Every structure is written in structure tokens, then in C-alpha cells.
Image (tube, rainbow, N blue to C red; front, top):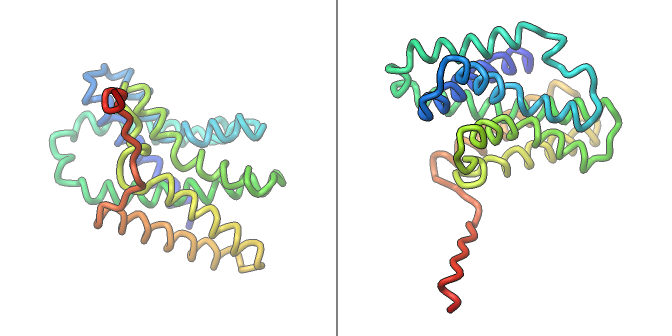
Length: 205
């Protein structure tokens, strides 16, 4: 199940990357690069940091075709994308949770310390979007919008807690996925955010 969700998620992330590129008036090559980076950047950084070689997508070329094609398709259907905003938010939430669980699974298999496992899950979940926003010259959404990285963190903690209790893998996946999806949708619906820090030197003079 997680594999299918992953495929849907990287497609959705590729399309979101293409839309971000379009807002910056990038050419078709730029659209493809941003789509690919958004969808697979988090997993790539995770693999490099953990020494998990070869990097996952190099062994699955279908991921490259899928993400770049999704980006290019977005160029064609961009005029209709505003009608699909809620669907994209749902797919993005599914992707966040799926990427986080996959990242944790990889680090667990490599027998890393638990705090590293949590970081690996979060890196997989959020860094594609961070790379997208940095390349598009804007403050990453993950640092300023509704709960996002926090959801990734909580999913990773729950997944590891259930794993340590010996909960069956399928039940763990279902529970962690349902929890993460519910948290992200609740954050979107009620606009839940972490406290923000606003520093204005002029206020202190």
C-alpha cells in the first residue's frame, strides 16, 4: 500500500513543483528540474546523509519518468489546476506522511540511533518542498504555514513507538498513516500553526 501511495505522492509533489516554477516564469527545463527536485529531493538528501547507496531513484528510473512527466503535464493543464486545490492538499498530506514513514524505515534498516531515524523521516518528508522553495527564491512554506514539519515529527515518533512495542508492521503503517493524515487535515482546516518569532530591531530603540 505504501508503494502505491508513494507513487501518487511523488506525482503530486512533481506537479506542485511545476506550479512553483510556473510562478517564477521558468522555461520547460526549469519546470522539469523543479518537479524532479520537489518529488525526490528529500529522499536523495536522506540517502546521501545516511550513506544509503545507490540513491533510491537511480535504481528505479520509473520515478524519474513519473515526476518529470507530471511536471510537464502540469504545464498543459495549469489553467484547470485551481479547481483541484483541495485534492492537491490531500495528496500532499498523504505524501508527507508516506515520505516520513519511508524515511524512518530506511534508517531503521540501516540500524541508526532513534533520533537519527526521526531526522531521516523528517528529511524525507519535508526537504523536497524546502529545496523547491529555495530554488524558487521564497521562504520555504514548511517554516511559515500550517503545521507541516511538526506533523512529520509526530508521525515519526508514533511509528517508532509502535515499532518498539512490537506492533505488527501493517497495523503500524495504518495507524501512523491515519494519525498523520488526520493531523495535517486538522491543521489545514483550523489553520493550526506553531508560534512565530518576529524580530524587528527598530522596536528596541
